[in-house]
Image (cartoon, rainbow, N blue to C red; front, top):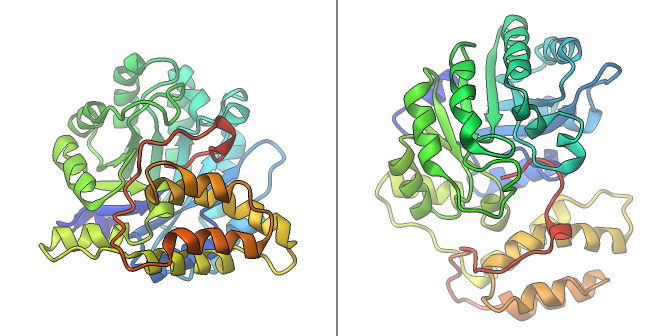
Length: 343
């Protein structure tokens, strides 16, 4: 990972998204250019936890040819240290601590973003993990829990634990994904901590990526929902960095991507109805870039069979028109938002 951070080009990372960034999804992203580094879904860590085998498979069978970073979530210091030591036996470039997950089921247990309410506890956890980790040690954080005011207290904590990289999602936990991203706070982190800082939050195009890099001075970018919607985004950002024409997908390209996605994330034993339901969570994000009035998502949310699903996709995507896949201003219901840390 140090080689990636020493290059002049910005580091591009795929965000950890629970129940999304698994082994099949990694393999699919790599077909479209993919990021420079892949983060696993988070390993849930507690006193009696074991490494979850499906997540571990992403590391052991990593098909991308690019580094993997294993993410942990939890608050039990001894268990976090034990798990970090165990993960270092596997081919991971770094261990990442999740300090940003805004899901209530997580933060109510004082894990993920919930830990940001207790800076002293964060300090203790980071110190113990830094002592236990001999490879890269990274953190993904938000600006605070209720308020970004605590961020100034968190920055010196991050600075003194010799992190190898800090990823900052420019919202508080309670802002979820609703507010504008506060990129000025990411710029503050760039100034305040000695390690490379990666910017995260609402990066949906190559032009937006360039804007965020210029505003923040960040060393790299982490992209989540934008990569679900537009798997070409990492390739497009690299093209822009090189001054090349940026690839613009057309309707048929997007339709083919959805077909590949359907096949990639379908377990052999899954029932058709369950697979169609599973695809709806991906289409919640893809659909935001398909039409301005939301009719595509309206139809997708009502299909129950594979045939109905692809008929709806073909009705909107069986064409050669250019599709920027930038999000229209549609509002998702809270139940449509994926649980866990993404973005």
